[in-house]
Length: 627
Image 1 (cartoon, helix red, strand yellow):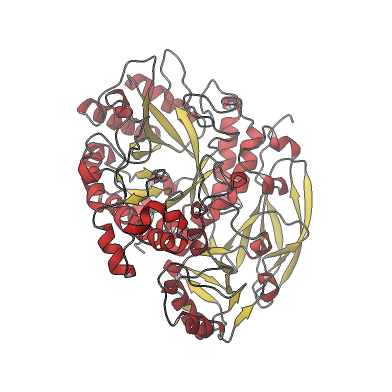
Image 2 (cartoon, rainbow, N blue to C red; image 1 turned 30 degrees about the horizontal axis):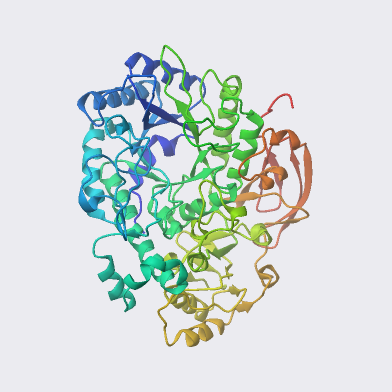
């Protein structure tokens, strides 16, 4: 995986600061320098460390602003960046208007393709929607030449604003519709060369052919990585910026995609807090320091535009704190509020799908205090490096062999199993603080003398494989590691996915299972006796561990945070009273430390454990006020 230029990374404001950022929604409307300055001054007073400018839809009651990427548009963007510099704020930019990427200049096969022809999907809330009825088309994300053509327009327009301290260029979640099955030029030839048969006869009824559908999805996965995420992240570094990327929703190995980004970013609460462990794992493997999250999105539910989300502007500060703690307990150490609508002197606005950040919202009186808490939490979660006792193989083959989610598991952001938005990690493995891995990282993984494994920048004591299907490309490095003496725990014997058969697959499975430290266990924790968990105790909270020299820093979310699901119950934090938990922390050399964790109402707790067993709580105080 490509690595970040160290100097560029360390100089970027988003990486250096612990203060949260806020997404700043610029509606297509007249924008004055006076309003820009006034709102940035307000954001600085609230304790934000920077903004991310995101360009969105026209307002029906306002005249339009300057044309997309025009000279006057560029001048406004440059002016905002310069004002941020004067105020000590960072300034990031979405690499386009709304999501996914696309604009009115796309032509021919640069437009997103379905097997049946050009995709009808339009970005209906794009800045250009005022001139393009229905919005412009979506970019073909499976063709790097289409991306590069689009990127030249965006790069040229943003270049004057990218001078000085490095910014991040932001890529939102995938959100490319694929009802007609994603396609791109030359795909049939690539498919035939790779799998030895034609996919064309199956495309019209692909969901009725799971094996062929798996092969198709495998090719789409590789194309998304090679044709979009790799060139995007490379482009950002070439521009002297960092790539901050949300890879979720993409039909790819999202762990591998996240690992390409300089700053992998998750999302909550359309995604459960535990999903953030995927982005955090990618950062750990790749040696990235920052793991960000688009926080508080659609907290209490989502309504289609132009309807406002439930309780918009009435949010409870305790609920935000409870969710932030849940994210921190899954590896997030940078918070991006979602978000702050552009305010003008003649009145406020609200963005339909976010927690409201503005002087006219219920959060305003407590926002500086909450942001100070998020800053302290981020600082604590930057100490040392992430610590994991085991690795857990993402079941990518399993979800690619499946179709749509059952209705009870669907969300506005999830329809298919492969989107990985159903509950992921078994709770029984959480005491070991698992590192999520995928086959993309196993080729370079190393077996350690004690039977542990080194995956990228992380060492673990064992690898747990609980998958019905394992692709040959994944099984081969697994067999190598097992043969070298790596500690591998198998919940079951894997099967070969897809239509293509490998004659020696059964032999490969047999060789894999014959490893000296390979263990079969339907209940994997029962086979991890040689690898101690970090914590033991009754009803453990979610937690995240970082190693600081020979010591450990641990953050545990309030036990009530485990129950957070989309949509969050309004006032959920009011039902999270003060609690205590008796736990035992197990050090790497067998040292055991008994601890009493004290959770304030609706809040988490941090603690440190020394190499000799000495322990102490870390003050991370925030009082949400009357309950």
